[in-house]
Length: 302
Image 1 (cartoon, one colour):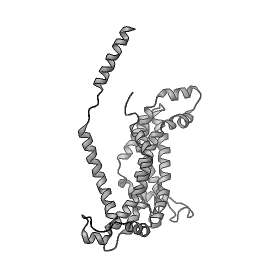
Image 2: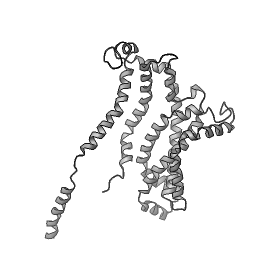
Image 3: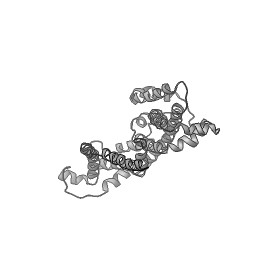
């Protein structure tokens, strides 16, 4: 007993001595520089949006003279028709995120928690799909959606074109691969004893997926939901390709309504761009704790 009590402090002091964390000044400087590089455009857009165009023309963009007010935001909100476009973005974004997380979680469970012949093959196929540029499939998808016949009570074009569904399908198909890859790696890190014990108790695959694996994947799902919200909300390509009616376009296209025929008011455009950023910024700040937890969980041992 005396020997053990004497050696324990020695081990503790050695571990503490070797476990000192040295400050990484280079990393901190790099992160601060990158943060400034990301914040400068946003700050400059907000600064420009708060200035009237007359003051900018008089004093120049690189100046502090003149008044600062919210007139550009009010004009952009009314002229751009943002309420309608925000609703369109909501109709497209929310179902897409739900479908992406549902399909990707089921596929990730199949390739990570179930032992069968095509685990790696399917995971490679889903991951390889992310390497294909969306523009390559633009023409085939457009022609395919045009040939799919739908009743006119569902689509006024008689096809998938000019519908929210076409954008939802395209975004879902292109985002499932990335989410499957992330969730499969996350599920592989979970202890196999959990599902083995459930299997002994008589739980089937669906019960294991719903009651055991999915509750443990909440941090990863929250992180992916935040990322997917930003990706899909900011998507400009698919809505512009599939939707011809202006009243169904998402908010990313609303800034086009603020451009003049012969002259552009960049103060007004900056205000419109700032308005489009506000929803994603609010949601990110609200889910920041879950987002960081999902990214850092499992990054350290012990």
